[in-house]
Amino acid sequence: MALRLSVKARVTAWFTALMLLVTAAALGFIVALGGTMLEGIAKANLSRAVQVNAGAVEYYRDERSEKFELDDDFSPNIFGSRCAVYTGEGRLLTGVMPDGLGAGEPFAAGPPRLVSGGGQRFYICDLPISGGALWVRGVTTAEEAEVFFSSMARLSFVILPVLVLIGAAGGYFIVRRAFRPIDRMIAAADAINEGSDLSARIGLPPKDDEIHRIAAAFDRMLARLEASFESEKQFASDASHELRTPTAVILAQCAALEKEGLTEKDYKKGISAIDRQAQKMSRLISRLLNITRLEQGTVKAQFERADLSELASVVCREMSSVHPDAELSSEIEPEIYAELDVALMSRLIENLVENAFKYGGGKVRVTLRREDGNIKLAVIDDGAGIPPEELPKIWQRFYRSDKSRSSGGLGLGLSLVKQIAGLHNARVIAESEPGKGSVFTLTMAER
Image 1 (tube, helix red, strand yellow):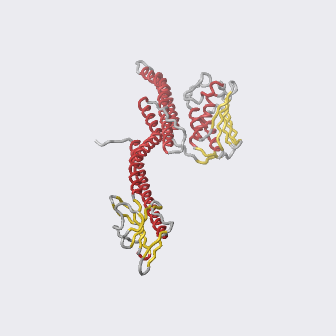
Image 2 (cartoon, one colour; image 1 turned 45 degrees about the vertical axis):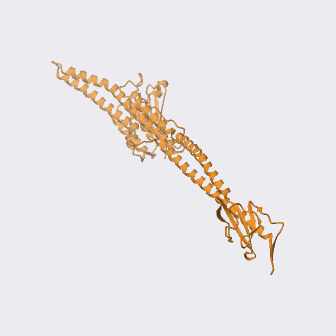
Image 3 (cartoon, one colour; image 1 turned 60 degrees about the vertical axis):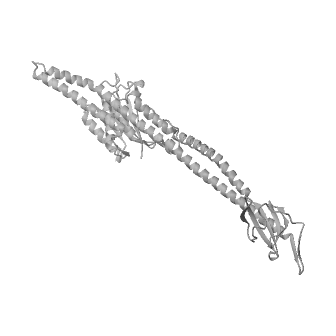
């Protein structure tokens, strides 16, 4: 079975291997460069020592004899090198050579060269005088470079593991910190999976890196899922609550119609009651579906630049025909254009006017005007008004107060108004004073 490592382990292993490679290459480069430098310095000092001492040797020759003289500048030990003077036949005239090296090594003019003798390695440099009558030979040991190589090799065996361990520990620390948000994401997902708690969030502080952006996206996804889940729960709860009464009425009427001895009038009355409750259920389900679809975003608004003045006028005419016994007046400023979904905005105005008819005193006024760069649509009624403590609650689904919501409405119209206003980036507020009616105002930017 293949060993499966975590992402953190793989990244740490890769980082450690890279550190090992880089450190080994760096140490190898240092060793090679250091050895080359030491070798170059040793050869340069050797050449310099031979040249200096060659300048301090004077050679004389006549028909009967030959001789040489050394100036005071001649030094057999200079610049870390040993120097000696030989005749062309290899006879040592002055100076001392290391054991194993002497005239046995042939003279050769040129740059320093590496030779072995007496179990050691040396650099030798020869310089001829008077055409080879005398030779100045310089010798220096190659041991310094070799000692450097061996010291660095031993040091590398100590430094390399330490650097690798430090690199591995540092890499693991960095990877662990970098992956900590992912661990929190996993913990949040596990908590949701185990406890079905969609309110859990990762909650990382905002930062502009990939993992923090993933965490923020994860939180947004959870918020959307929670909203969707709560919306479904709310829909099921609301539907079951509101459908209970009409369902009970329909079942009761069906049971009553099954009895014997009923007249035709009784049947018509029972069927009429069933029809009313079924119509109510149909309207309720339609409204609930509309609200839920808007909340979940499954219904997309189709925005277009439209004449809001004309739309409001058309809705007012239609609502007047539906409620001929009520008094509806309007003050609509002409040619007010806005970016809106015509169908949804029409429904919003209809709901506000319908709400005013149901809970007003019989007189409703609709106004539309421009004000301070905004468009304001107001629906005003002369009803009993809404108590101040109940104003924040009227936007909730199925909310109906004992006084102002007693006319048999579903309690969904204003909730739908709130949803449609939000889609248009608009704000809708209610102002009311008990006994003096209510004013519902929609405010949206003029674009």
